[in-house]
Length: 90
Image 1 (cartoon, rainbow, N blue to C red):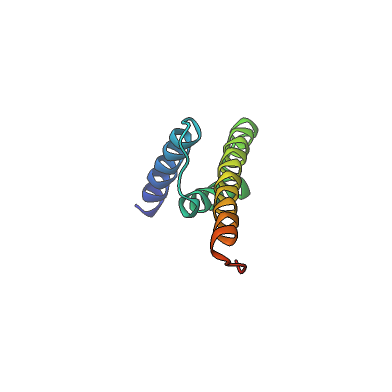
Image 2: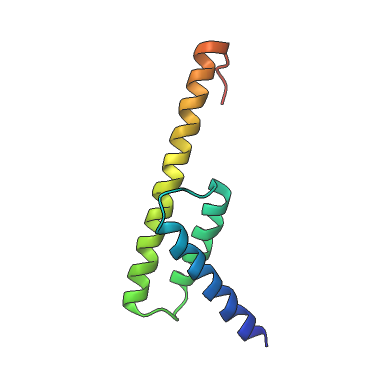
């Protein structure tokens, strides 16, 4: 029964990632890192075909792009705060 739970979990994770990477809005950075961790575990395993590996890798790249955009937005907000309020530490 443990194997069945893992399969269901992987299937649900795959569906969530497909939904997230296929839409314009981004996920929170913590959620993106969790999803990236799941993708990495799938890639490290030997259960994926070559095509599935490429698809998984591409989805991971999309999540990384979303993380970069989120981090860039936060950095811009910090810079605005520094200019207006004098905060200089990150």
